[in-house]
Length: 110
Image 1 (cartoon, rainbow, N blue to C red):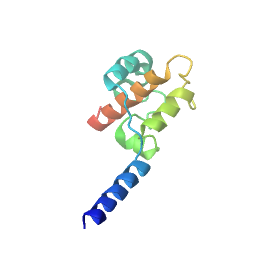
Image 2: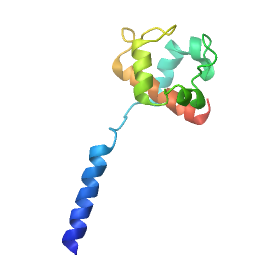
Image 3: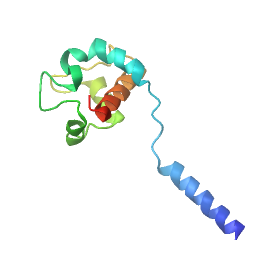
């Protein structure tokens, strides 16, 4: 019986690690300062001055498949439409911190 339980627990552990997403260890507090200096002119309070329909509020981020760190990092890095790319202005860890801040604020309702 102990062997069966051990094998089951090992299988569950392997399955959990094999199919879980990697930890996102960004610093939202640092992201706030970067956001304020680089993003707030267009996205103050989670709004979007260029396209008011595409805010940084959770509902809009979900609607446009942007409610993930990966999606936000891609958008900030490469830009899209009227949004400029920040890959030459910000380091990858700074962009990750901005993504963490945006997600945190979206969860909190801005």
